[in-house]
Image (cartoon, rainbow, N blue to C red; front, top):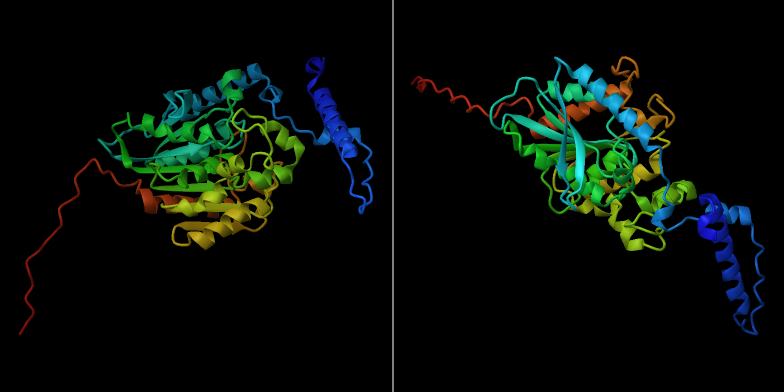
Length: 386
């Protein structure tokens, strides 16, 4: 009978039953004569329902998939129109190394290609646990292509716009990381990409996946940037509370809260693996971020400063000009929704200048390595006068 109740009602009934059973067991246990009996707490059923978090994958929230697919088609058409005569844009797919799942992605490249191995490339990972690569990133990916990069943007499992099966396959901090890394297998098919000059970059949840990738023992990237990244799921789920927990704790690969699945949450939280960093990494965060709150991001910044001062380039932006509902969370992604041009603030300009410089140092996108290096000019040997 309970199985046929609405989701919220099942939460309330489940919480109530759990508390009743717990109270009954507590009441049945013998109390030492030297200690006063603990009074049975009265149950606040409304609070119990509010705090209850399911561990059943069937209870994960569903979405309006038709609406998401329609939105993705609009994004496709916008990129097609805006990219014409500016850069190559196409939709591609590849297989995930995790389990062979088909991962959709966008590919952006210069219209005029260099020769074999002529271009550096980057994997750019979108934000939002259930998000996708949207048109708001247009001016930034255009800049990347103008600098000589080839960019691939995976819509890893859990992303929106690709139907129910892809959305509901979400694996927070798990196989989604493999999905993003697997984008390099598509880049390998492009002869003009130099596989020795690969970078990875992401914002928010994309920064989380970027950090996970860079903290793995082995990966194909020479450098990476994580902007306002999610860092610690143990802290994050506690700080955000049951509403946030309810969206993810019941995933098939997790099925529980941090106190129930400690090792799993440690594995899925990049901050605990920062000691593995072996390549340069850039991290930018904002003190007025109301999505990935600064109290979460400072854990990553301070850990990197302590453990990897020679590899990590970090900057904390103090209360950058607000943009959007999450205030500082989008401080470096300010874009006019109509013109799709940057709406620059001092913090946005500074962050992108630092980011482009960081990748130029590490990936050298301006170099056309398909051509031989020019010969070293040597002149007649000069003889000093006697």
